[in-house]
Figure 1 (tube, rainbow, N blue to C red):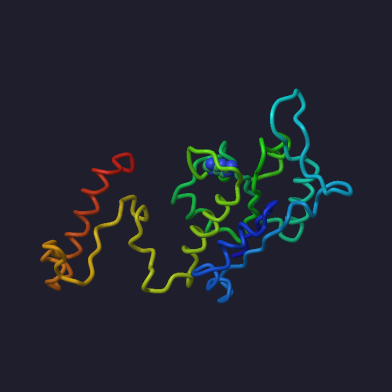
Figure 2: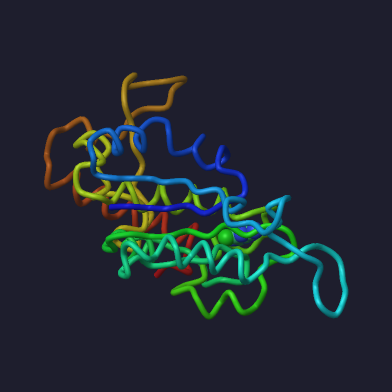
Length: 222
Ligand code: 6GU
C-alpha cells in the first residue's frame, strides 16, 4: 500500500513513520510512505501557500490553487488514490474506518494548518477525517495516526507476536486483561484459570472479561 502525506512540515511526519514497525513495513515493501512538502506547489518567490480570509477575521487560509494543484499532480499517476482532508470538521475516525482505508491501494493525506482550507478545496477530495473531538495545531499528528493504524492491518506488517486478531475494537469489544511473570506481585496473583492450560476455559474467561470491561468502560460500543 502507498500513502502520500502532503504537509508544510515533512519532518514531523517522517519522525513517526521512520521508526519501529512502520520502518520495518517499508523495508519489507508492504508499505510505501511518501512525504511531500506543500511549499513545493507554493506561489511566487516566497512559495506562498496561504492568504488572508475574504470577509476578514483572524488567521490564514490555504489557497485553493496551491492545494488543488498539489492534489492533481499527486493523483495524476494513480486515479484510484483516495484523497483525504485532515481537519477537526471531518467524520470521526474509528477502527471501522481504519479497516476500510486499509483496503485501498493508495491514500493521499492532506494536512491542514492555520485557520483552515479554502472551502473550494473540498470539491477535490474523497473524504474528510477528524481523529477526535479536540483541536490540534495541524493535521500532521492525525496523518501519523492514520498511517500507523492502517499499516498495522496490512498483511505481514505485524508478526504473530503483535497480532491484531485480538485487538480492542476488532470485535467491537475492549481487550481482556493480560498477565505475565511473576505469578505473584505484592500479593496480587495471576488468575488461576490462565495458569491451568485449559484453552477452552481460558477463551471463555477472556470473552467474559472483555464483555464486562466493555460494559463498564465503554457502554457506547455495545
Ligand atoms: Cl485531522 N486536524 C486538526 N487540526 N485538528 C484535529 C484533527 C485534525 N482531528 C481532531 N482534531
